[in-house]
Image (cartoon, rainbow over all chains, first blue to last red):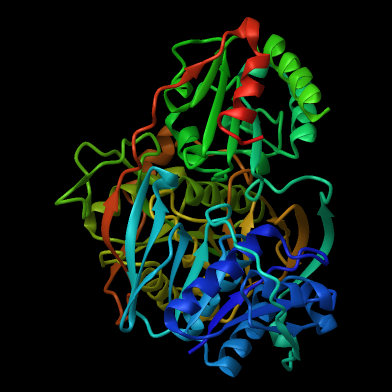
Length: 323
Length: 245
């Protein structure tokens, strides 16, 4: 019974989080003594599809029907369930992202399959059940959960696994499914993709600002830092509520959970709800004028000082480092 | 216009998370329970639309009698009716199976769920309900409008946004940004007592994911301070010591 992995197609490339999922799937397949089959939807170069083998895929099923150019949870679920039927896969892996949240639950209903999300560790397989570690309470705790259904769905946290890359090539097979009007329920009227920015959940470095920055215009120096470090920008809840930054950048319990290698909290006091969204980060740096700010308790490195003096100095140092 | 909002009971987001029974149970001692914040955003947005277009808003919860104060809170905010499915919520599949069963009877124009609960964060209930009902599902909606015929909403996909239009019936899972929560008015609180709350019994449904045990993350080491006058040193430490840049 093969392991199937959904590899996202981000406008003609496969993002790192999806490569991590492919690698994770190959580890699960090795444990089960079976093959790893990736499902990819939409136009993509053959070389990219073959290169999924580098991350552990044995085979790639490529669905490139023009009707699939827009992401619709209904049609995409049809495709993935077709791939499950044709391969007989009983473990389905996703990266924990928009696609997994849209397709995963529908598959769960369709296939009577249990789904575990925000997964942090490789599974222990014991007969028909599979036990796995995930985060709960926005990263404030881990839970070891057992999936007991015949088909199991796993969504893996981005940045939690570092793939070992080989030069294996995957066998690419074109695939198709007959889609009807009933597989499409929505119309996309406008797409606004910020392609030159690093995606927040995938970023290995995140530069985040809080109320301490006093005004939306003061994000310029954070943007500059982010550009130099290839980082994503983020913010605390009050900043999003005041409209200084979009809600899509709000990191915390009711916003986005991130777990980069490096998280800069600049002018963020560190309320418990904020820490919940960032405490999976490998290294946290806090910059704050208030030495009593709770952020310093969560931080690995701290500077007690004014962001308007500290950040420009850091930017100069990064510039020197980058040469 | 009939709208259904799925609401869940979660610990207040400031709750200190601890466990009991050898780390197998969440410690509910002194926990303040609230409507899942994302569900409350959904409810509030639905009320705003109802104020413009009219209609009935029903909240539905899978839970035991202890969730009724939260259903009354939803009434105080502006929901018209409530349905409590009398069962302990075990996993997303079980909860969604219950909601789908009773939602099919309701002839709702659209259904809202929060993107996820802030405790278990399964992010699945909305999608499972949509599949059981055979209706479109839009995950993670931070902006929503409805003109009585067509809904226009934004969704946040990886690295961008899309504006989409959908005709009812459909299910959208709501996230922050859609509106601001409201504080119930005194009139709302008074009327909440008399709004109809129906209790129904659960249907047979599977439950496929169970928690064996919990663990708290290891305590963080001490923070290493760099003098503000010597800020440049931080970059050196991040590069040579932590090796993250």
